[in-house]
Image (cartoon, rainbow over all chains, first blue to last red; front, side, top):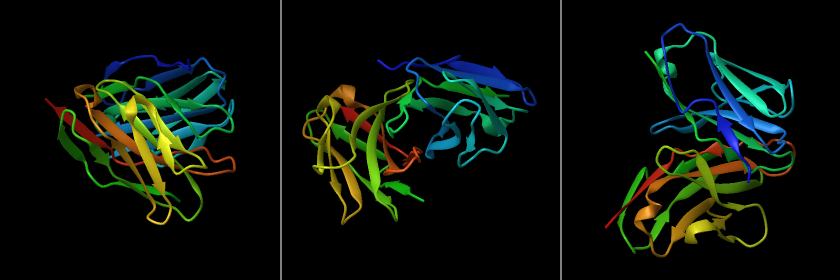
Length: 112
Length: 115
């Protein structure tokens, strides 16, 4: 079974803090994705990566950055957390050539 | 670009009743279509997918969906629901072929199954 893990299920941070969300997949997938999920808005793509050290902006990249130094790990960084970044963050991965994505359990981030 | 519209934000049904969750998409190119389910406090799990071939697709937990190209729809159905089907369901679309693996999701439909 594909396993995608996220470093925290729940996280509380203060406004202005730098926040790191980690995602690790164990199936040697090339593609990795970060989404945020908000009630009534569904999932929106923040960033994605098709290979190590590669990254591309999704639909809502403002206020976020990413890092992919190793194939299995994809980090989402909030440079200066703000209250409007309070959300559920979901990581996903997929193998090269496949459009089917496998999701982690999510990190519920609260910024106060 | 692709877009997905899930016509109902909430669908309440009684146990053992049939259910249909509606999904329409918009795209100028050929697409792949997916339904994902999210149980409370969990990530998303793939229910079923349409890539090509038969337009009637069967998935896990007794769900099925039918791809209708002329109506640009991919509605999800189950003939008899259980309490355990209570969850949020997301329809998603991806451009077929090429190397663009992004999914565009609908806003979700919350299915509540009542006893």
